Length: 243
Image (cartoon, rainbow, N blue to C red; front, side, top):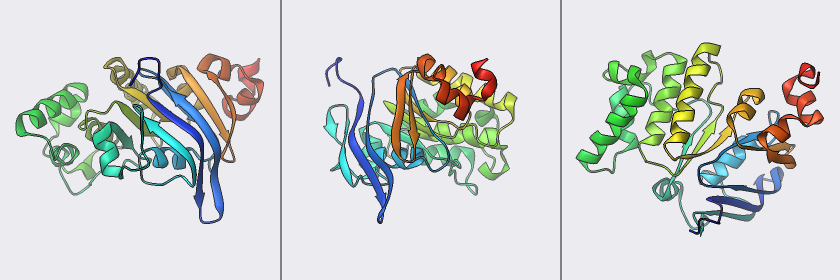
């Protein structure tokens, strides 16, 4: 892949559930090292977009390329191996397995020495996971479960990490700590695509933003420019943002 090419590109992508279009004619680009946020109300098509990128859904039209290759011929598992990891809304950890077992599953195909190296790096990023490695995942708090979900995704050593509503249901102090770690992930060289209900936090974190309404792209640009858009302020940031 050329340094002058985007890491991920969606070209006129549409996503349908039966006869219902969830996303219509969406084009976007994500460049290496960026944090990009995808904003929109519930039902705007954000989660469908992430699921399509990670291979859990197939586009009904358009093309998705990653690192210069079409993703159309890859299964979801192959897309992970190709360099995209997805942390879904709701975390989807295995509650009856231990923290360590959840991480093992994230790196199940790795040689033992590499598996241990990556787990050590996850424990360094999220020390609470190391302290409780033998506990069932179900015993963790919501914030700790989110850390585990992110840690499990990072076991694949992705080039691109998809995060779907990482702050959902978490206390403000926990969210702050979690987004500090997200910044660490970005600083480690991982590119991120972030769907986040807290639009102000998402725009503060991201380099660029795309805004979806009813499955259509209505606004895009540098995060600061999108945050200054009066329509975005009214819809997502509150009236006080424009004062």
